[in-house]
Image 1 (cartoon, helix red, strand yellow):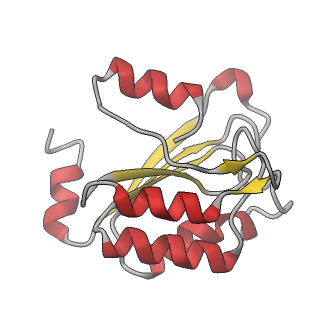
Image 2 (cartoon, one colour; image 1 turned 90 degrees about the vertical axis):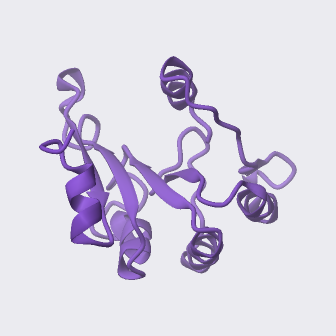
Length: 150
């Protein structure tokens, strides 16, 4: 986890959280080994907050090969990936290409959550427009996640 907003939201909801390593100031790049080690060390079944593209605040994104390894570890640990996608289209210039990390996890059949903001990339910042999407592995899980069920 990396952004102050996330910390505030989780604190307000009384959800315990911890950070994983991400930025390496020595290389001004991704601390990939640290990130993987920390995700491996998290308790099985943890939610792992990931930025799908245009990582805030660093702007440093994993490579496609690194995303594969991140997905491997999350899948091995039975973690639930929770993607924050606030800047889709800003990393590569392509909405489609910037969705590749989320699509990788979805293609593996993993349950996941995607919080998506349209405020910045659609010029609707003052409107605070967005969505939460939940990909479930079964119809039963989908019913449990449905707002009709709550």
